[in-house]
Structure formats: C-alpha cells, structure tokens
Length: 140
Image (cartoon, rainbow, N blue to C red; front, side, top):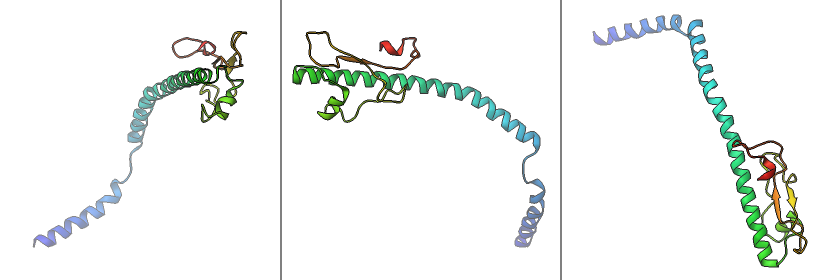
C-alpha cells in the first residue's frame, strides 16, 4: 500500500508543477532593484581601484627603469643614448609601458647635465592629469 500512495503523490506533484513555474513581475522587479543597488556600490569602487592600480604600475615602471639607467651608467660610464639602447644591451626585456597612456612612446626623457655623456638621465610620464593622490603625472 505504501508504494501506491507514493506514486499518487508524485503524480499529484507533476500535475501541480506547471502552474507554479517562473517568477512573478513583482519578484523580478525586486530582484532587479537589489541588483541595481549592489552595482551602485560595487562599480565606483572597481573603477577607483583600477585607477589606483594604474598609478602603482606607473610608479613601479619608473622605479625599475630608473634603476636600470643607473646600472647602465655604472657599467658603461655614460648614460644611454635612448631607451631602446637599454633593450638592445639587455638591461630591459622590452620598453616599459606607461599604463596611463598605454604606450611605450610617451615617456618624457630628461638628458643629463652637460659634463655627463648620454641622452637619458631620467624619465617621466607623458600623461596629462594627476594621480589619485593629487600629484601631476609629469612630475613622477
């Protein structure tokens, strides 16, 4: 007798299931409102974090490249004539990319003082604008 009643219950559930499928309009509106609220909180934080990470990558690229320029000077007794020379002599694997301008050609190169030889003493970002903490990119 127990198996018969079980079969009857399963059959009853199968008949009732098509009538309760899907969401109502109110449920969909509530779900969309919750999703919109979460997005208004998350999206600004995401873009702020993205800008901060670009600033951090720029600072790291400048630090590494300046260190390589100093090592080149220590090894050769002169500064490099171009950033490409650092790559040619394998001090760098590739020219660093400025994450703000997304280019490796936007660097502003500072030559050394006249008694020193070479063309690349220092470099700065060629990007317009300021970092998240207010410093101009051109002074980094």
